[in-house]
Length: 112
Image (cartoon, rainbow, N blue to C red; front, side, top):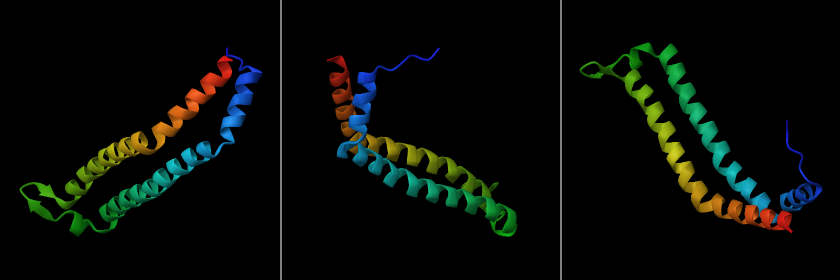
């Protein structure tokens, strides 16, 4: 069963939601996430399209049993981890201080 939220908590949330700090938090998040999501999806789509339509290129052997397709596939993992690390650092530097401040403000307001 869902816990009911008190009217005081709802009012505090609505007030904080309307602040410039909350808007900045959302803006920072969207400015980071949307472009990187689009870029990563384009990168992934390139890999898929190249695998389907550029078989000769993707099958080109670089050394031993390693071909371009394998390198592209492994770079998908590298890119995923790289973006994750980049986001964690970005969030810690730009978003977490704002979120912590807003959470403290909210908790202080509903404890009264």
